[in-house]
Image (tube, rainbow, N blue to C red):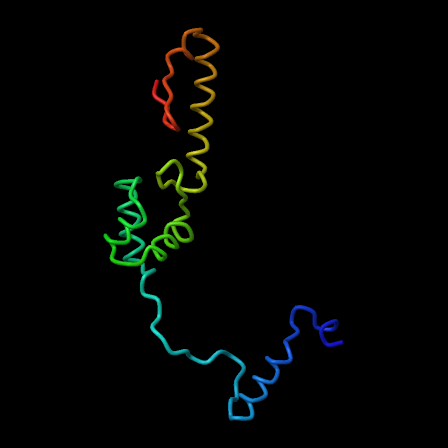
Length: 137
């Protein structure tokens, strides 16, 4: 009946007993108490800036190489790259996940220019050399 009434806010019977015991032993507040253990120091602004600088210098660096350069674990390097810097690996290179407004406009401009060249010059497409995701013309 309580589960139907409270839905997602419903707590289990075990959790209710744990809270009862805690309040019986003298706890007075519901908020989480400070926990023991060392706080994470890997995702500092300094480490984020170092990783960003290294990636911009060489986009083909591996997670292990970045981790050894910054002296943090691969897990934290991965979290910084994906969650904080918003990057993903494409063809062994780290690139931003989403294009900003200027980059989208530039991409559209280049595409329109290439379509225009292809329609006016019949040999244009024959002069484009491709390999993987890199275009050279």
